[in-house]
Image (cartoon, rainbow, N blue to C red):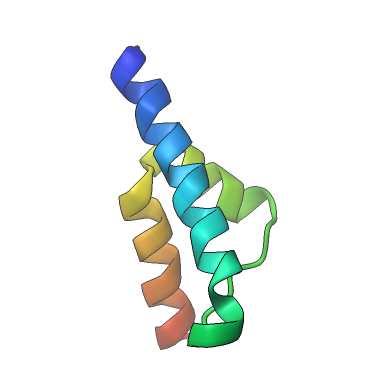
Length: 57
């Protein structure tokens, strides 16, 4: 349980970091239910997946 919560917290932090660096990198993710769910459930790999999917689509 502790690892799952830590993974979710790191995912939320990664999502915030991506959005804070958006003016410099040009990569921004919308904060919606999908992105919050992916970052909370999957953690950092979920945020990476959202970034890759955003670049492809």
